[in-house]
Length: 397
Image (cartoon, rainbow, N blue to C red; front, side):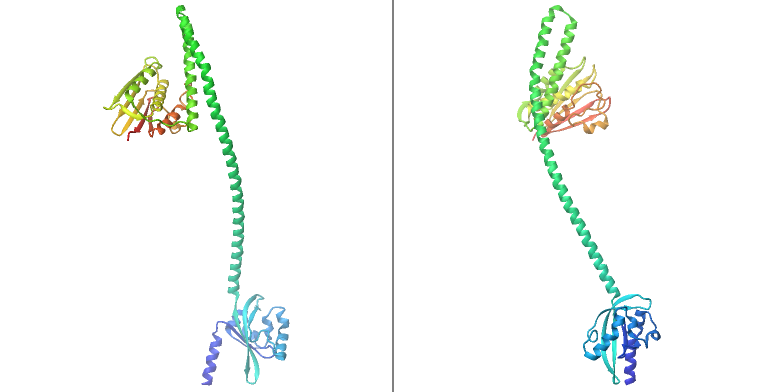
């Protein structure tokens, strides 16, 4: 039975995962198991009979015998019966950490010390990696915190800059609005005087029957008319930008209005340009803003006249159904390049094929905004040299 127990104990020691070393009272190694041999890199023959300090780096190597002697004399344990973390030295000179637990064993009337060695290399490596990761993470947090602080400062600066820019833009906008309003009104007085003088000159020159006088008076009237139209566009834009335009919906006869516009615009049409008006539908009354709608129609017909040649037709149609009102103006003029069509309703934009034909680029922008104020929409179709069709549609609910 004793032999069996001894064999079992030896098998346990030989197959233990942790290293096991026994030393005598003088620190000489008596036994070492395979796990300890693997850990330190020695064979049993290389260590048995040698002082256990060979497995220790300085300064523990030089002080080990002193630890053992002091314990034997005073009974004050340094490691024995306590256990602690120490550093081992392998055959190759590599240092590694391990947990050492030492027990004092009475065996055959003498003292033997058994050391149990648990390798901490992987644990320490993991701890170092975790520490490095934590340090790296902390550095990243610091960096991102600093970046965030800098971003906040930049955002505050940008906010302040934008606020100042908006304030300046607001002041500039107010200044521009006052200037446009002032200029529009101030220019009207001399223009009216010029227009009146041109009419009087034409009247007084009639008995002379001088065609040159009539020709130049006609040029003066046309120039005054063009400049007046430009001022009207600027004044309309200024009112729209300032939010001063509010639609006033009233019931009115669309057909009557359209016939008046047709007669008025026919007078300024080019030679042999004919405006053909037609209405579809039994009803002729709508509830819209008459002044805004008139401005839209006149603007579109004026464009049709301006961008079409002589001896052409301009089709002007209105239609009233149960749910909507439609106004269409179609010409056979120069058309709008496809690349320009997406910018057509932008303020001050003019198509590239307009050449020397005068214009401010504000008309369609105003038409689009007036149409929107009446809850309507504007659409168009155009082809180069094959004319343009504009469609205004308004819900009647």
